[in-house]
Image 1 (tube, one colour):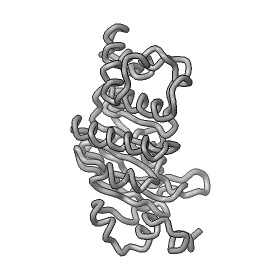
Image 2: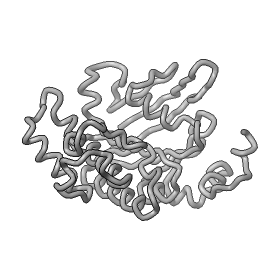
Image 3: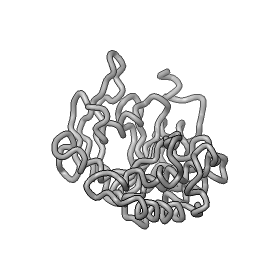
Length: 248
């Protein structure tokens, strides 16, 4: 569904992406792993058009993402941000229904509220939270609100940026299960970036590892567990020694 051909991106003299080539299949779940600062978030921003690559091409359904109707393009995506990124000044249902009230297919306030409450139920939150504000919720509840917002418009593609960061192991497991269930239900194409290997094994159909600005390895979860690639082996086992540490 999404194809990246030799994508490069630098910020001044810092070369972040050095020729990313990757295919993301339709209705599959790809998890991108790699150390901090390796370009995982920049990769997502390039696909979304928030950052313009210096070289290379990104295709969605065979069409260059840099041309065409920008609003129609973004309508195909949902995003769960790392920090939740909820609007503090909006209550919970208004956060979830933010996109439902905008654009040519905007819903009226009552219908948007009903739809938002439906999505909140899907992530395990009752209507009693609808009129609360983000500051009144725990971190885990805020993350679920962010997930409800990401799926509110039934997007074809959903990006998850470090979905379990800052959560305790039990809540992280809840979020992982919800992501897997919802992506399967919707038939969506999912791309997740994470350091959490528990999340990788819970969410992924395929795994790609970024290192030094390129895709160092790409395969299934079972292949990842069996690989002898020293970079992947060091990363998934959290070893302090190995080729990644030696290059720093």
